[in-house]
Image 1 (cartoon, rainbow, N blue to C red):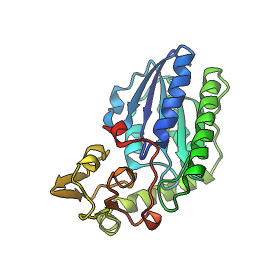
Image 2: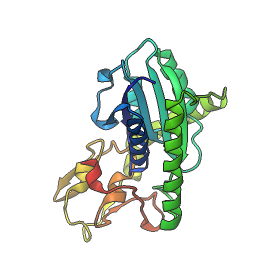
Image 3: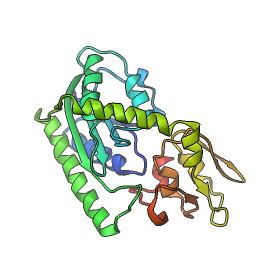
Length: 258
């Protein structure tokens, strides 16, 4: 691996951030120079192709969010730049590891490692704190070990034929549906004005600038459902149809995204 690493990550509610930070700590402890950068704040055309590139993101609809795909699709063509990936997920992806390998190799990248790490869910059913804490501990240990395999040239980025491409197709359809105005209006996050203290945190941390504070938060129609605003609202005033009984989970504090 190159001595210089640019690690680009997107994190909805903190799981991927923790993994990227832990892997970066391991790299630095072994003498590597690491720049940790957020995908939502980065221009893919400006990546340092002389460095090893890291990509970290959560799984969403069998692959990952549109904003992550936009960044990856915008990466420049290269001649052998090393790249590794890591994703965080609640259970199954299916449409990311193989299709991403194919895409990056078509751009001239050398794919040196892929790893998927189970972390707590931030949608649907939120498990209790004890279970989530254990998942985070196990996930970060796996992240440490994965970083070491990259350093030791032992990491792999395999590819299962056919099925991942089908899953990626399903993912593309799902992501397109979530971006439609009809879907955006049906699943639009609601604000409980009786609880909202107008702190503006949701507006500040939305990765797509989809929230505007007009007396109370108003959400637009370009949400990708990363759950950052819902999970990190200190007053629990942001409501979503995809949380069970309103219970939320976040791995870090809102200030980490400012």
